[in-house]
View 1 (cartoon, rainbow, N blue to C red):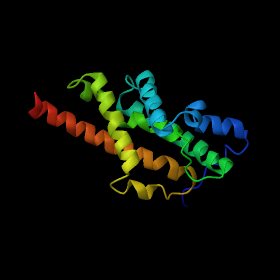
View 2 (view 1 turned 180 degrees about the horizontal axis):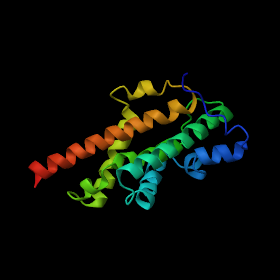
View 3 (view 1 turned 120 degrees about the vertical axis):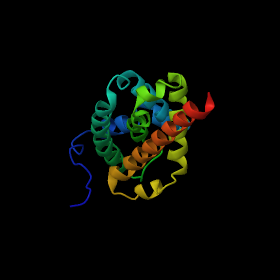
View 4 (view 1 turned 90 degrees about the vertical axis):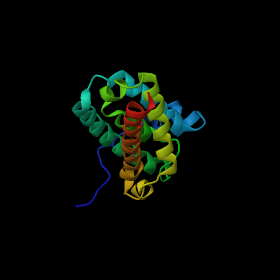
Length: 172
C-alpha cells in the first residue's frame, strides 16, 4: 500500500479548497508567497505552539501536515498544476517543526533570534532543497507538496539546535 491522496476533500468547493491551500489572499496576491506563508507559519507557531512541548508540537504538526496533504493535493488537482507557488499551506504547517525543543533554544538565545534564525534556515532549506529534500517532491499528490517542507523544517531545526549549541559553548 503506497501513499495515496486523501479523498475527504473531494466534496469541498473549489473556492474553499484553494482559499485554504493559499491561506486566502496571502498566496494569491503577495509576491514571494512561500516566504509570506512561512512568515505566517512563524506567527502560527508563536500563537499556538510555544507552550505545547515536544510531544504536543509533534502531534499538532502531524495533524496539520495530514490536513495540508489533503488540501494541497486537492488544490493541485483543482488548479491543474503540480505544486503551484500560490499553495502555501505546506510552508505554514511545517514551520512549527523548525522549533522543536523551543525551551532549549530560548534558554540560550532570545526568542526573537531563534524565530528569525529558524525562519531563515527554513527558507534556505525549502528553496535549496539539499540533502535529498528535492526527491521528496516526487511523492504523489499532496504528499510531494508537503513532505519536502516537513523535511526542510526538520533540517532547519537540527541546524538551529547545532548553532545554539555552538553559540552556548564557543560564542559567549
